[in-house]
Length: 130
Image (cartoon, rainbow, N blue to C red; front, side, top):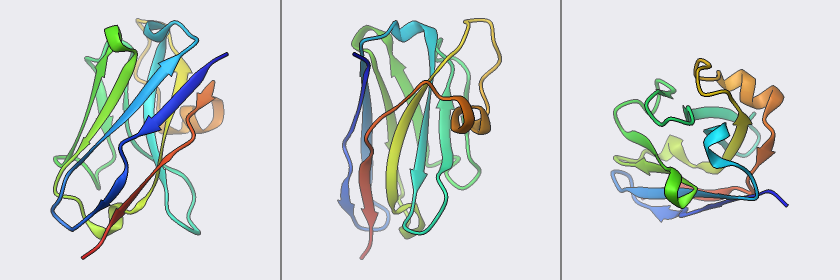
């Protein structure tokens, strides 16, 4: 019954921008922290950004800090990842994940998502090349 649908990927030149969306259905959206992860061919899946259910606490992997922005619209059951100044090394399939989190819990770590995420989206491909 639960679905996480990632969308918004595409092909852009270095320096370009994309906005990814993760739309969630079938669960109580406010009860879950949402994380964005990416996986390049031949590489392990790694964390990019995550957000607590309140949307007020966020984290970014150093490689994207200052270029990516995560946001959340609970009314639309959607989490966004605005990606700017994209670099070739950002090329990957991007996945969103949901992890049940009490409102007063600390922001989950990437490892917490990777080991215990309740749901994963199907992924959306981002390619950055000249």
